[in-house]
Image (tube, rainbow, N blue to C red):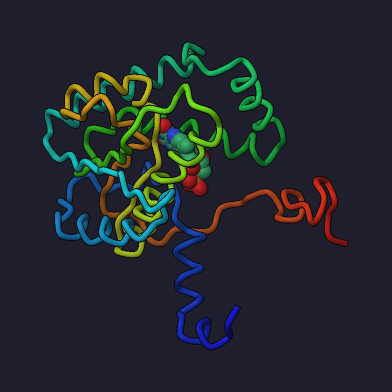
Length: 234
Ligand SMILES: Cc1cc2nc3c(=O)[nH]c(=O)nc-3n(C[C@H](O)[C@H](O)[C@H](O)COP(=O)(O)O)c2cc1C
């Protein structure tokens, strides 16, 4: 890393945005409109994200119509109900893994908070002034891992960059996917062509109630091997 480049950056601000961009659900301001120019500005920044072979086959759809948002929120709730009932088509291993992940104390605690705020968003989603759905051209659910990684890897970084750029402008969003259990229905509603895959739905609003904080995460040493899998730094 070149010291000169780092000196030019306001590292503290960059790190602050990177460490405090949360999935905001209960602190979304549903009553203040979000200027379209600001959304476009954030999207412009998101388009600097990488894509496999620089294909840039991404598309973003910004939804502000109250009727459309209400219908999307209905599908989101149906998706949430299917998820809770275990009717998601997730492999048994996938479901079991998610439960096991939440087994320790920290994640158990976080899970309880998540259920509360997730429930709130589920009820209120339609009130978000803006929803953005990120999409990528192609259907790859039956492809091998290389193709899947290449496709997801060509839309998820931009989606995250978008959340970061919104955050640095005082806007909040939440990464959500539950509506994808009704992906086709939402595609039909919004006119998204069948060859596109939707990646995430971000409700966007002004952030209320002060700044956000870094979240508790697993220790970096626990999740990082050096040289060989399972070999940790002393
Ligand atoms: C792939 C993915 C899917 C997610 N889907 C949802 C969702 O449908 N609804 C929701 O409320 N949060 C969803 N989240 C947000 C996570 O719950 C959240 O990122 C996690 O609890 C960590 O919290 P933080 O983002 O505030 O740090 C999703 C996050 C990711 C990365």
